[in-house]
Length: 144
Ligand SMILES: *[C@@H]1O[C@H](CO)[C@@H](O)[C@H](O)[C@H]1NC(C)=O
Ligand SMILES: *[C@@H]1O[C@H](CO)[C@@H](O)[C@H](O)[C@H]1NC(C)=O
Ligand SMILES: CC(=O)N[C@H]1CO[C@H](CO)[C@@H](O)[C@@H]1O
Image (cartoon, rainbow, N blue to C red; front, top):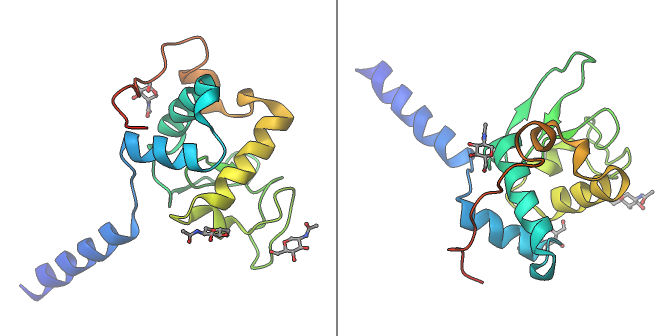
């Protein structure tokens, strides 16, 4: 019984930590952080990319990849070039990887934009494998 209660409490805790956005919440966040309405294609693409990279979860860390690097957050940004896995902000986005796991996606979105400006969406495997040349997710029901 005690074990069950502890497990339950742990489950509740983990659930609060793990933040998964709905599709429309994601759309709203992306609009707010540099994927504007007038670039609807880019917004659409951003939604597809995020859905395939992180299932819209802000706190997800994956890896290690074959080169030992890890990927962080909504946009699964890599710590080899873009974020610093130390406690000091650094690398090309001048952030810590931990900052990319925040529910406030401002830093993660800014970093994703930087990556996009340099390499386009092809920087993301989730985009190349699951989105490029395919129908993009329907976001028409998400309020402006
Ligand atoms: C990096 O960000 C810190 C604040 O987090 C800032 O003080 C510093 O000037 C920035 N460095 C560069 C090179 O932009
Ligand atoms: C989100 O983070 C950014 C930069 O770190 C900050 O300027 C902004 O005020 C934060 N927004 C909220 C709602 O906390
Ligand atoms: C693994 C995963 O999240 N795949 C998704 C990729 O994007 C398409 C289009 O939005 C979804 O249908 C898949 O579920």
